Length: 375
View 1 (cartoon, rainbow, N blue to C red):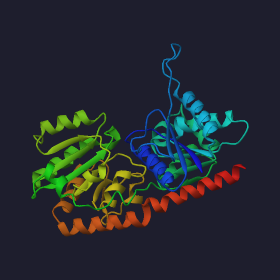
View 2 (view 1 turned 60 degrees about the horizontal axis):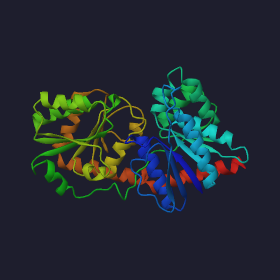
View 3 (view 1 turned 180 degrees about the vertical axis):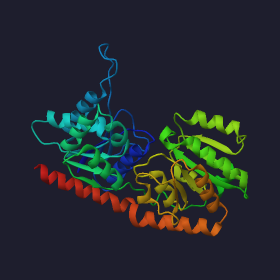
């Protein structure tokens, strides 16, 4: 199949999953064409089956903001014609599915079906803004198929938008050959002494990720045991987190590592991963840690309980429950047997439910069904 994929090419979960999906599809013999304003963050070099088409947006004096939705629709149309695409797969309803709808409408000579995958913010934040609700509902219902990354998100979409379209669940996935337990001794030596424990947090540092809570949790842990914290990623709340680290005299114990591509190496340095988000529609970072055999301490919100089994793969705590999360982190960090058992259970769960070799065929089946129905 020849598949066009559009996503936000950033370090957020949706961009990572969309990119990994494209890479996996190309490895399975499909021709994949990424269509976006920048190269997706985890995309490897273009190859015979992996292509990138940049959406260039011109600035017109008439417009306060560049018309990206229209530029994307035009690029989708051109790529579909020039590369004979079979279908488009867009990640995020707004604005990508709107652009796909326009591209399909422009292709009058043949049908160009499109699949929309909902990742969370497009529904829980953007879509529920009343001014965007009609266009979000329209773009979902006009899609030839719609998927959501968790049962939680599928239910929210049905309840909030009252859509007639079926929203089927295809969960996020991880390449279990890339994200796997590895000896992190070399990496750990860069950050911690042998007697110190290592905690990690990985996100885009947006307010919903509760980055200040990560610092508060670590501060409580650090009062009890020698430990270091790896802050992986970047975003708007990094400044306040850095200020908190200085105020709490933790400068020598917290490492801000910025955006990273090979995050599996850093995850494998950690003894536990913190994810105290206000909301996660799935929690890809938690899954990546589990695949590496690293127990997680997360908020009991959104789709996270579908991924993390409380007390088995890690711990789920009330959102913003800093004291509870610090206690759970200490329980993992001070009990090597529990840490090892949880890490092993998380790895086994990733292997049995969320590896790419189990999830990618579900997308292939979906594509074939969509193509059959569009004939």
